[in-house]
Image (tube, rainbow, N blue to C red; front, top):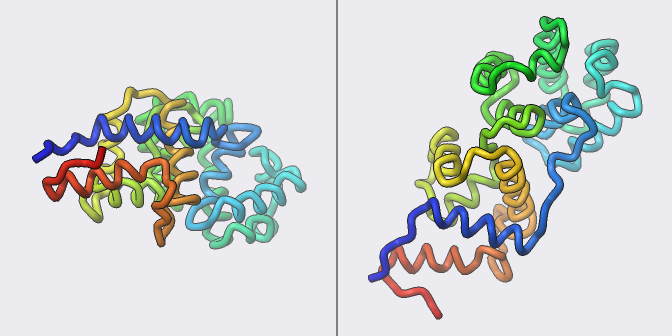
Length: 231
């Protein structure tokens, strides 16, 4: 019986395989820290292409700065972010974030200057900001190493039996953060590669053929059954 590989090395192997297959992803696509924050909110519960449409509308109306967005009325903001879905809720969340930024003399720079863990705790007090959104802001806007756990991440770790089904957000995050060095560019690249994997292969109905991680999936299943992996 082959001893099952531990999650840490498997996560490192998966990262190497994905990077070799897909190359660097250049994620998060934005022109400023504020745009990154806006994107983190708008991509909640929707495909990125829908968030992009809303971001494009905001850019056209000069609303991808704190000042430009603050100058919009709530109704106008809702109209511009409508393509992202849940537009009333997302507009409210953006206004809540603007209200927090306004408390700092240095604006967004002052907010992002807060220590990473304190900033995360603060972000989580904002209505409409959950762990995934907070960690996306920390990782991509502040460059603070917190691994972002989204639906693509969950699909990967559950199908490869790296966690139990229904594991908590914190449990999945700890799995990655214990396996990887605390490096924001690494976390960002890994997250982006998992998004690519989720779109191309690890879909709700999986397409495992030709997946860069197909061998790892076969290995995890066979090791669980006590069989040798194929040569």
